[in-house]
Image (cartoon, rainbow, N blue to C red; front, side, top):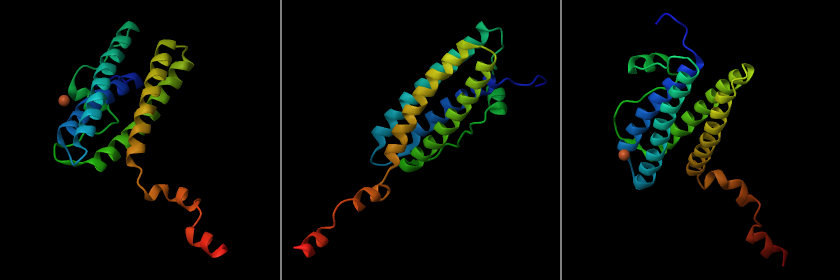
Length: 167
Ligand SMILES: [Fe+2]
């Protein structure tokens, strides 16, 4: 490809890769929380599928050609796809945690560039996407928290042995 690829086309490529990547995790997650993660990833791939179409249509409205081949998406995406295999639940959540952060960072970059060019259609779109990515990122990080991560809260509780000693 000769021409420099726009940030929006890289964003579109990431959505195409994420759509397939999340399907992979949706099909292949294993563990006792399978239904929960299977359903959450279904909501995610439906979201990416819809955003993929919306971003391309907005590009057309603005006179830009959206990339249209899987080869182009793979060559331009910053998101990385995965081979098909079993994925443990925690592994899936860690992958989603990392990808959510990357999507947030990249959507922020697209938003900033659009703002500099007074392209408010893209600014608004990215703000909507940033809000929903932040929500999913919160879900994922909360699911990754363990009892050990909450150790600080326990320290604040009074030690029953000390209470006894004071008596
Ligand atoms: Fe499905």
